[in-house]
Image (tube, rainbow, N blue to C red; front, side):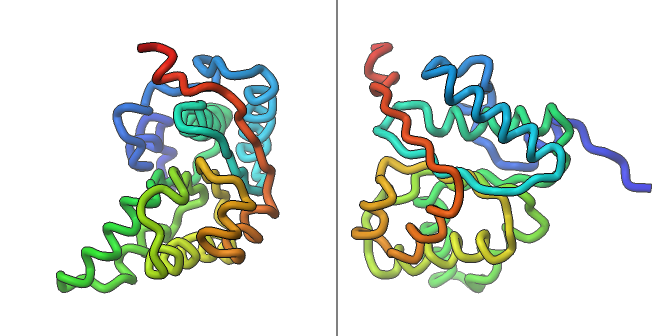
Length: 191
């Protein structure tokens, strides 16, 4: 019989950076309506539900905090699926790194194998080239086709993603719940 892993083990396996490990819905201070939605979404995930969320807003508005909070809340409620936290720029850098190494691009995409939830952070960050757009499309499309729950954060709106990156990405993201965080940059506010 397979041993159930603890919430701590599940979080460690997800690759959440140390900066965000303390994020939770309890510490999210950017609006009760966002916390209510996030708790409901997390409960549905824990009960075996699916779906995706697109979090959009300016830098520092709490998108990543909310995304990690949803994952932690779901795990505390019983979601035992494997998760992966990945930033778009890191993903693209990993793909570019395969060009000068013996690894194939498949090894980068294999990180998605056996994952039931992916947090795709900072979609649209970095220099937008045709290579970046195609790489990001492949990632979003794979999650979409495999029905991997995806929580995507971006400073761009769906309309901007449609125009600047790829309309196919915007189309796939639009199928999920769209949350616009119209909050100030809390990093600047604190300093």
